[in-house]
Length: 95
Image (cartoon, rainbow, N blue to C red; front, side):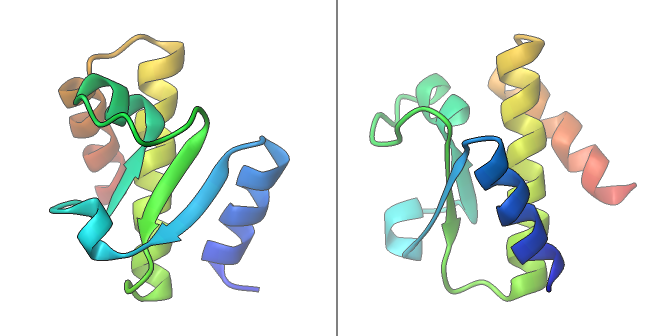
């Protein structure tokens, strides 16, 4: 089982929906979570949902989903503003 599949299974257990969508839907983003969507005025995502570009390679989908989950958690639990959560998630990717 790939890391991406394992992370999706984890999300399912936490009741977080992961939808693979077209890059056209995401615009300039590789992925998007509902918390970021709310902060940026993008209203199409339902609670506890992450969108991932379906055209990404599996390892890139894994890194993107992990980033979105970290970002979502920081905004939801610690009340970080979007850009602070985004920077923290990006730093975490590099570690």
